[in-house]
Image 1 (cartoon, rainbow, N blue to C red):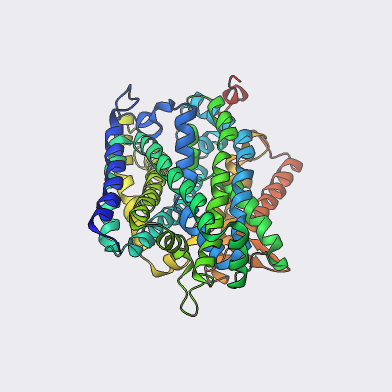
Image 2: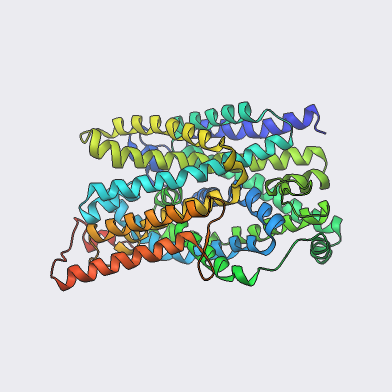
Length: 500
């Protein structure tokens, strides 16, 4: 049971983080936040340390601390896909993001849609890419909200009211501080998360007799620690597809573009794998939860649902004050990425819908106002989505569904960095065909899993991308053979250059 001091600690830490988010409006500020670049990307002035915290805040969220241990506690070895997935991400960051940062800096881009518009001379294709990013972001934001719901429920707090109040504050400091809000709050979040997780991964094995005993007890309890041979292809494709998708998400893209130079991104691609070590141990906490409960967290035969594995372990292994501390850290770990996600989505709506189709002459100050309005709209949309009962039942798949959508923008954003042969027709048709097929496959699987079984299980997002690339390649080849290929766009080779 929690006492008054536990609740004071819980709300005090969350309140402190929110206050930091509001005060961030004065941090590293050299220009008015009425400027869209200053508001949406903090003027592109963040150095290695801040970007490390910011991108870490983007990636290591409620998905990491609630959904991944939960999947491990219910499905066993399959959950380990999250570890190689984040390891695979960083070489991709090293390859793609410095070039994207350079062209964005040289041309004044704030979103991926801005780049696509000039690269293909097509504001409609830019709109499609932007809206895909927003749609993919919604389940990811909802995942953060559902993660907080789990913890509030564990602490016997009023879930809906608490969530609405919390995200009103998130909207508040995002409206006032722009990207500075989640960037500064990410430092608080990471300090708390690292302190909590390091304590947990030291204390839990000691109390349970070591990891050998934990694995043995979990196996006796019925947890399948091995990956079924039928899921081998699913495991590999889910890890690889998730890695390809991560920096196509608007929030990760925004975090990278806030860097002061391309070398800051390269340094972070070397330093961010430190988080992967943390993720490995977090995943193993799902095994420890099964060892303590004595059965998998599959929601059957009286067992809790998978999302309660992490809270259950903490509450049964630590005093109530530490549970309050750890849960507050996870809540803050959900608030920070939510802020970045809604801001990145709002940027896309402002830049690639409002500016291009509604008010092309909008000043930077006007764009900043519209972005603030869209921040509120996106947060309200995500809250509504998260209250749908199916969302809470499919917490682990919210991220993989979003990844399946955003993967279909890879030819427009990543491949176009390296070839001028792609054109708006091949990329646009490839996007449309692959997205339709992806949605059909998800519906056929009743929106319950992100694998599609034909001869073997494969991640739906990667199937869609394969079809996408095939369509893009065939159309490009036909246009090349019929001499209809021409280089499009206003971006020149020099725009990709940066000092190393």
